Image (cartoon, rainbow, N blue to C red):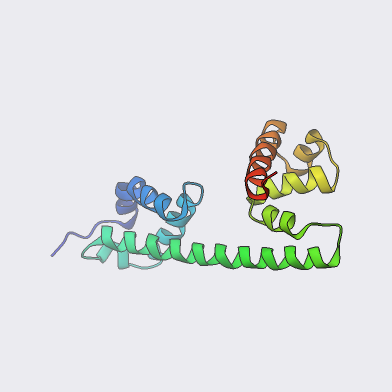
Length: 154
């Protein structure tokens, strides 16, 4: 029989390892969210504190949450591709390949590209509109341009 420990104590003990595990599954940006959601789902009851193998239970919960996040991401990308294709058909001036390439960018990169090139805003205006620094806008624009160059062979 194992000793019953508090759920909070178990989380504190294994948090760093759980985040590392989640980073492998969903990437470092989404790992803390995956762990938080997984642990919150376990904290709703006494399951975690009373589990015979609480560490294994936490890892399973993180794995399940990571899979859920991945499926959500796949569905989001599929919706974005549909929108890009529809917009390309509705506006013949827009190249569908460019729209699909832009849809593959991160949300922040897409926002910076859209506001800079479609709305013709300056970097300071984009920064103000998004509530970020000008340096952040420049960084996201540079990364987006680099990725678009690779995808579009420009």
